[in-house]
Length: 595
Image (cartoon, rainbow, N blue to C red; front, top):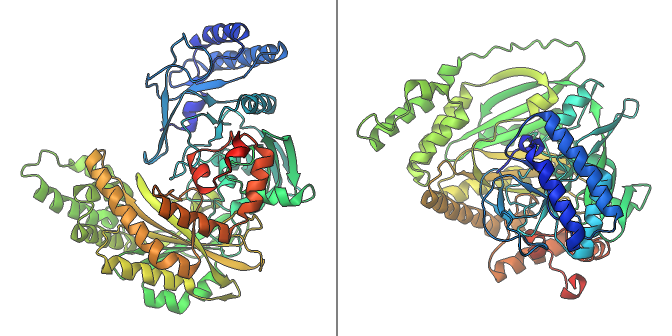
């Protein structure tokens, strides 16, 4: 696993290595690794010097007619075998990149990090000529490893500039490697912000739009629908500038293109005026939700439910804008202190720890225990016995108590309020399905939750909290799970189930993984078809067996314009260099198109 901060570190030793590799490339008809940032670091000046030298040497080699320009990055060195490309005599290191939860990993020698559009164009063209795969990967956060590939990856972390901000139209043009939090910080000085946010802000903008990320808001579409135009670097057609006024069909398809139509280099987004939100959190039950759900959907700009399995508890979070200078009349103080809110979870920890350890050795000290947030403490509690149904219920009950004592209000900028702590490493499955229109919700969203909760009890699933539920408007992007060809005011609900991975023990993680996939399969087989539910692209786990995979492929063909997507792929990426195992298995292409 790596973070975006590690992507911008470099060291002086790379300068001499770069010279050596580029000199050899002229003799050997291909270009050796361009050593971009490593996990070692020195001064920012050395990094800048290395970057500048590398760029001009790269251009020089290109002008001299060298072969493939392949740039490598080594986040976590794990020496393995020889280099994939070219030199058979020189040893190179193989390296691993894992997603945030450590559930998916790729080992590769090819990790490309261009620093400009021109460099990206060179890399894509020459990689295509050589049929070298370079799967676009963003921050590596996708739970299903959608951006990972053993054969090679391209990351735009060094292409992270904010190119222009138009305050009149409220639009921003940004390089696709910029992170959401970086863009939001830059926009604030212009009085702007993004229209909506997912739970985290570490994503690169390119990946953010390509997987159809979303926040919550019944009248707000997923983020791909906020794209006004984009610049797409394709292997087959070069660089394309797409908008609704220029090849609109391809534009809408490419907005949520899963990184398979081209490498998104630049994006223009429709923003909103920067604003603060008043958040109200309270605890209720299923009966009250059924009674008030339509009203809450229609009256609140942002609405989120967190259902706690095996309890009659649901946490309701409502967020609405404050006008500039408005002072909320509600009290911002909480009735309970942090210690009081965490008391049930801390007490449970001490009780369970006493049963698991005959002596205090192994317990968290009071200092350690009192330093943990609730999500951190939940991980510690679940780690004792994560698949014991009775134990998980006790942890869920402690969580319900925590939220009951956390009711109240708070105010903050929209990006601060809409983000939230998702907890530790986890398996997650999130589905999206239609639930009527904002003017007339059909309550299928609440019926789905009822069915999931019944399923958990019936099959004795040790399901931890929360089951998270959010809503969006529809998207015009054909590949968005929230796409609608029949109604512009269609309403969609998104529901996520999870199982945490609170341990580094391989056997325990394997057991949790098996249990989670049983949980997921139960919802898949019993609920998805009847609710027309489809998984989030960044969370769809590709089936290993042929029968299950065929079932998924057939469902995708019924829901999405797969034929149009495949035609576009064949034209824009004729050698299939932007795909990986996930794309290949979900959208298999005839062998002839990859020859």
